[in-house]
Image 1 (spheres, rainbow, N blue to C red):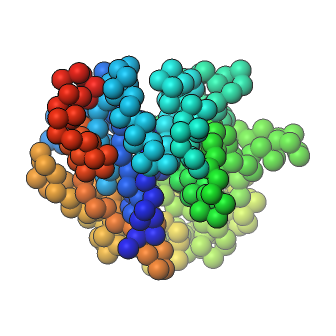
Image 2 (cartoon, helix red, strand yellow):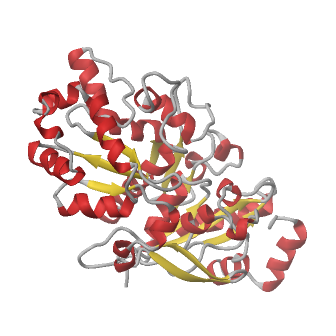
Amino acid sequence: MKPLSGVRICDFAWAMAAPAATRYLADFGAHVVRIEPHNRYDAARTQPPFLNDRPGPENSAMWSNCDAGKYSIVLDLARPAARTIALDLVRWAGVVVESFSPGTMRKWELDYESLRPMVPGLIMLGSSLMGQNGPMADYAGWGYMGAAMAGFHQVTGWPDRDPSGPFHSYTDYVVPRMTATALLAAIDYRRRTGEGQYIDFSQVEAAIHFLAPAYLDLNVNGHAMPAMGNRDLNFAPHGVYRCRGEDRWIAIVCENDNQWKALCQTMERAAQDDPRFDSPANRLAHAEELDCIVNAWTCTMEPHRAEALLQSAGVPASVVQTSSDLSRDPQLAHRRHFVALEHPLHGTIFAESSSIRLSRARGSVQRAAPTLGGDAQYILSGILGYSEERIAELAADGALG
């Protein structure tokens, strides 16, 4: 039995930030039912890459990854009959997760204030960009905007170029584990006290702590961290350098004199004798010249060959891996990071396994991500106990989307 067996979650969330969190819980045994809208696809179903480069709601790698192990039903929540189904699922679950713009659940009378009297001990988490209240609560946006609001665009990119920001919807990638932790804390509290609670989860606020050193430096020293590209405040060389081949790169850093000397020996350069580079402070002061020297060597090297030479010499280095590299990575293969899952439409597909390993339990993916509304019969009959006649009436009424 998995640690979260018996935990039930009614998941109204969409896109990635909150669904990725409930995916973690599903890996450890939580029974997660996704309620999908009838009038538009979940954003995760629309994001590339797609299987065989064919766009479609069942072909997205993001959906396949974020929602593996869950069940799906499509409901038209504008219809009273569909809202009744949703209420029954909330009563069954006792834990609700949503990530709509603030106020959306209230329009359907599925907000915490409406649900709490019907479900003793209800736990509900509302995940939004800016939180449920305040002057910017109604600001609807994606992780791109969340990263900008949290300050990441100020410190990423290069000082002589426009802000670039971190890759993709940054907050969607860094906050799910905190979302999952908040849910686990609430579930543990309910087990001990019988009391539920509402969790107002702001993605921007959760992401800000990744910039804690920069905020601290500003508050204490009045120094605003600038954009530095791949440079570092303490180490040089520190960067990502071009290698031989199309768009191939390697990340290299020297944290001390011994690593610097080992890098010079590997490159067969006498740069360690250059007074410009004879100390960490001098290397930082001449980082641009240093980057030119390192780049001149890496450009001649196949990336994995350079990685092997540097690592064997004790220099921290890693190839910037492509998706193709990752699929063949021996460490990931040893850890069984990618798992094959049977899919009702595609045969066998692949998804990431649980990356969280506990000493007394291991998470695992039990099933592929659900097809759109593909589990309606199981949910209505197997979970809620509806009769076939009632299910047919709901379908005829349009409640099932």
